[in-house]
Image (cartoon, rainbow, N blue to C red; front, side, top):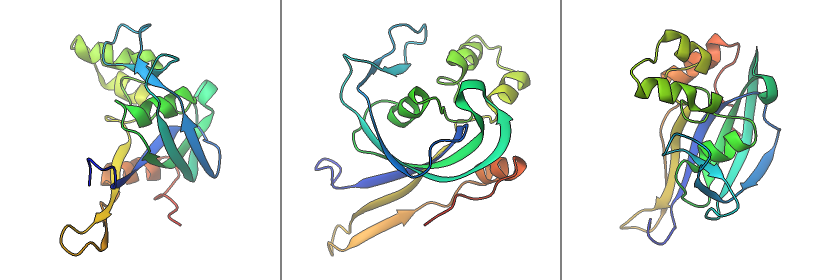
Length: 176
């Protein structure tokens, strides 16, 4: 089913700033970020491979000021329609809403480089807002291998992401 692209995956993310409400399709070819000293960093670029990510706003909270990203945070449901490296992270960051805690795509990757050099410290984590990027593999939809019936698996929202939201005046994502 993976090879035939019959499996649908969804992810939960917490991003910096208040992302637009509703459902959107993010499109942008993704390839290596040739302007970055971080070799694993990808970017939306003209010569990349086509990529598409479906996203849905699931609630906003908090009021921390992230400059161009705006204020606060947003829960986002993400469904990649293609499978590019770092696709969700790249698409959201390219729209000005990087994942909370993303060492590669927040602040030009400064925290990633400091970690690489063994210098990452509590101040770096505080600037990122969270020790890891706030992305969670949430659901997996497929056909049962024997019966062929639709099957949806759901992993609960991790406690650290719920704790983050609560610490910033929010709660769990608004599931519809």
